[in-house]
Length: 293
Image (tube, rainbow, N blue to C red; front, side, top):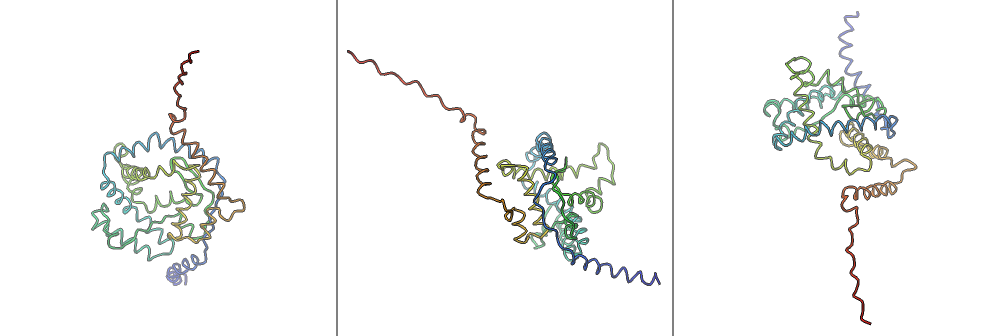
């Protein structure tokens, strides 16, 4: 009898999974920051590390490559990491999305010369990216507190699980480095180049972070909103956006925030131009000659 029930159980599991997923609701996003003190220390550490090592490498990479080359390398890494999306689409019980991403992956891998070209986009095959953090969110797991981890950067208690799960199960770059061993650790070069490519892309957005009143808070809110849009396939409900932006809080005062930002910007202008901070010395005025008596 158990052997006869086993095939029926296997056929029923997908239906059970879909019904459970349909019954789950995505937890509302959090706007608090319970680990802020730890996060700010880690943000300062990562920022110093970036300025000392990572950013100079990314700047050097941009100097020795032109935009078409950087675009091709970026397209390659985007395509080679699509199995992460395919695997999580299946875990999210979205088989049609998995088929669509698989088709894009195969087209770029073959017609696109290994992924260095992107003919799939020209054929109308959109790029959809997801990960295990989004999978947990779709199954109703709350995001938990915001976290900034050393060497990794922004994440949440929920999203942090995508690092070990996606890396071990779905990421071809991680699979390659785990199953090869070369002299001087050359098996990690593809992963390092991928990280350099990501940092190189971020250089173009540095001005937004530099002009922020509080760079840590700016990055935190930007990360949360980006994940929110990814979770809702680019179209989150309006009430969720309002909650994320704090518009429903009783003490929310946009004019006060705007005034703080403007005061901070005014303080930064003299600091950015120290020569203008010192008043110019006026030449001594010449005394008129004494009148003859």
